[in-house]
Amino acid sequence: MPRLTYTTILFLVLLILSSINGYAQSQATFCNPMDIDYKYNFEQLNENISYRSGADPVIINHKNEYYLFVTISGGYWHSKDMIHWKYLTANRWPFEDMCAPAAVSVNDTLFLFQSTFEQRPILYSVAPEKGIWEFYNRWTPRLPKDIGPWDPALFHDPDTNKWFMYWGSSNVYPIFGAELDHSKKLAFKGQYKAMLWLNQYEHGWERFGPNHSDPFKPFTEGAWMTKNNGKYYLQYGAPGTEYNVYANGTYVADDPLGPFTYAPYNPVSYKPGGFATGAGHGNTFQDNYGNYWNTGTSWIGLNWAMERRIVMHPAGFDKDGHMFANTRFGDFPYKMTTKKWDGKGDDLFAGWMLLSYKKPATASSTMDTMSVNKITDENPRTFWAAKQNKPGETLTIDLQNEQDIKAIQVNYTDYKTNIFANDPEKVYTQFKILTSKDGKKWELVSDLTKEPKRDRPCAYIELPQPVRARYVRYEHVYVAAPNLAVSEFRIFGNGSGKVPEVPKKFTAKRQKDTRNADLSWEKIPGVVGYNVLWGIAPDKLYQTYQFWNDEPNAFELRALNVGVPYYFAIEAFNENGVSEMSEVIMAK
Image (cartoon, rainbow, N blue to C red; front, side, top):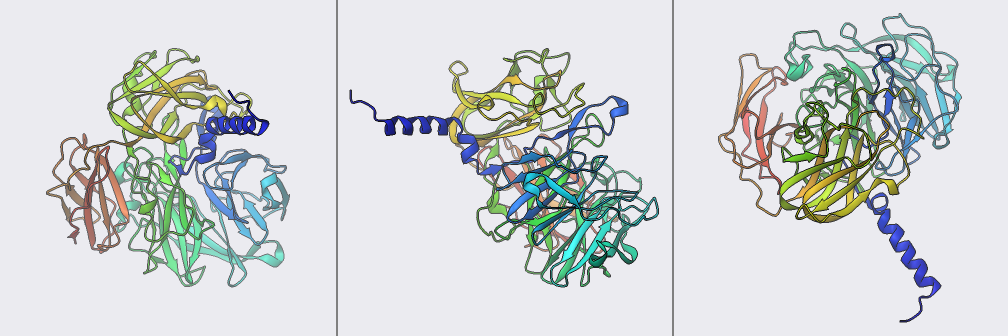
């Protein structure tokens, strides 16, 4: 046997290390909710409720790197690729944590401002990757207490070098706007004025409640300004963060202070069906290739109505200047961009289908009535809990056939959590993923004990290579919470069968109240679900509502705008792929 040279030994060591750390090196996809270390939220500290949450995101591209600011997180996140995010704390941070922060990048400087009803400073940094911030000013002028500026957005117009602020969070007041005076450290210049008001009587999607079914007066918040091709798009969130229909809309103007015109294609970002529902109150930004993205807030609402997560969807402006965000399969794996893309971003969908929906599952133990079947129902508000939080507890899903497994997402639930300090030495997540063809011989395919410790409430694991298996097992190692609880164990990949046929007998009929339309279709045996697609033209089907096959095949859609004709289509999907889209039909 020949002797191994030092170079050969070094190569073999590097090869082994590379295979162990393959996930971190080769990951090319992401999956909503975003896989960041969401922080324990203390809005309900006096209620003794502890849970992880993230909301109201702002992602800023600053000097070709990305910074994510999130409500009540004690810091922010930095990324070079929009996949791997590192949490940072800052040398200067407000005395109370930031809620719905505003940020903007101008030249070499990143500016940051918090929601407030009082006088607060604007911060700035020329080295945000190091957590170094300074005071740009010490205060902003006081506005009437009920006015804000709450949920602010800072906007710098590069063509005029003028600065603006937009804000508002209320079901009484509108979204406001005002010019800022750069020569006076961004003090308000002139009077603020109303930019837009909600109108639920003409805009069906602005109605409150689950599927817009509650007569309660809706809320608007989450202002953001985007300039594209000389037009100003004032984005806003509605109708309320605690429902599946939380969305982003836009008004458009030729001037940053209006007058603004309602976009008839609203909402621009809407995700009412599936696992990660809700897409409102975020921002719109461009990546390093010039592609647009739209961020938003997804609803959990188990421990508290304001328990939430962060989502991110491909977005853009079409040839007619219509703003859109693509939420089709918006909580399935998506490829991260590496170049400029055209169209509405459908090519970014990885094509990896959900293999785990309603599949049989077993657990090593179960607390009380918290059934293991909850981990495959695609509902973040139901969950399984183990009798004890100890290493070695397992969850096993039987896919019932051998499939090509390509990615896994584990979503944890904070059940009776008593964590009131975000201590990174104690608050982290570790588990192992194993697969098997026969349920007897198991192969380790992912091991989080091999990566640096961090908390991953929505842990997404992309496998370096597809694994052919029937059974997938979660083996527990560590979570900081007193209880081990999992809301969803999601498995993605592809089967080897045929894609579904096109759904038949699809109908869409507007009601007398034209904010509503009645949808129906003929079910296809054996499929996983359907996407109903709609928009204001046959080539502008930008909206998606996802349904499961075990749900009713008739639905009242309550998200339409009065006086706007709509076009509808439907597609079916299973574990093998997606059908062709049906014929587009019109509903006046």
